[in-house]
Image (tube, rainbow, N blue to C red):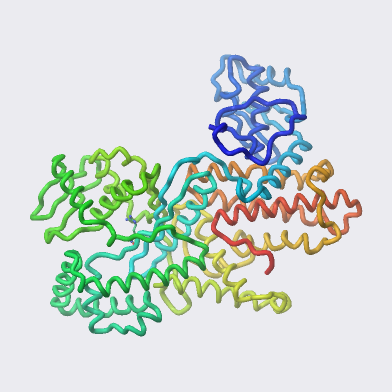
Length: 605
Ligand code: ARG
């Protein structure tokens, strides 16, 4: 409830007409809530017995050129739509919140007062962006998750196997979700659940004796282990003894034989360290590195026993399975014939352990839609076991990516993707020699823009869509691409450098926002006002695409204003300052949206 939430550094000025307070709204963090409340109040007053709260639920964003729209039929009131509309229009009086209302078929379109909009939105953006760091660091955030804890598991590559696009998508989407939940007040635990266990480690152990090199292992553990794996796998195809040997080795690992585990420990440790560097490069961070190997035997046995006691286990030629056919989820094997553990059972045991340790309010698994069945079986088994927290688990899935390769061939390592993104971008930048000369650290800049390109391509559409990995398209400065977005941020950031004579800007209260009269300014400001809603919607849908779309809309709005709503060359200093302040607020919000997407907004390029 709002009363428990920390107070916001912004509050509505008392000089404005009072507006009703509506549960679930928070004008101190989303000032458009106040405008919607003002609209709702008018309509409710004109159409009893509707309450302001009921109407509020029906205040939507309008189409182009309209601020807010209400579809009258949704309230199911007696009487004709025309009559209802006439009642609202008859009673309407403009004030400092609402400027006008228009009736159009089943709809009422509302325009809010530009003066108030300008003042409140810009004040709010400024106050929240520059609040003391100890309070609320950024505009757009909310407190809906206060006191709640979420575990977000993402990336989760397999050691000694390739890091494929599925892992890349999980990394990108998961990092976004971690930022998003934090922005909504949740305590977030970012977790990387490594594929660090399973029969392949028996194989690698056998392979390492034959092909391993300590030196190469230390130089590039991820690559070397992968090479060993590929070689020994080829041997195993030809020689069944290799497989038997590998299985025996893995059995020793499962039984906790220290001598069988020693090497494996080093491999894991070196791989994690290497990954950490690459994640840092991507601006991605984990609070916990765990893995399939860390799931205790005890919790897996506990799960199996409980399933057994509940009569949920069927025996099939020595293997144990849970019949989920009545849920259309097939049969889920939970124990192999030879008694070794498997992926599903580790997930079940892992969830039990995580609940004991963290008592999460929610746990999200960011895993490819190729594993939909696995996750559905896993969640269903937990429900059948009647864990009260079983419905706190959520699978955030995503579609496939086709054709991810470098110019040299197929991608197997995350490092290759990062490098290629940097080098392709670097070449691109070199083509414009004049510009290139002025860049301080071109390689660093190229790397950052390249990564932005990869991420934006990944998050631009709905998660479940498949897409084709395309270096040329994602790294172009034209169209809605990562480089374009960085460019938009750089250009707007240049405004302070280009207009030093206007600095420092006076405090907000002394900036005359009434001078922002152009429709282009209004478009920008209204968009800025909508950002907290963009964040809320993203939390509900778990879709980064809404935030990406917002960032591009804002960039386009800024770009449309740039030539007409000028700062440099504007003779009226008060006007120039008001405009500059608006652009700086726009930069702050664009930057906030980009950071939410795990990007690092650039100041120069
Ligand atoms: N390591 C797995 C893979 O690469 C993904 C792990 C997903 N998370 C989980 N809890 N099952 O396929």
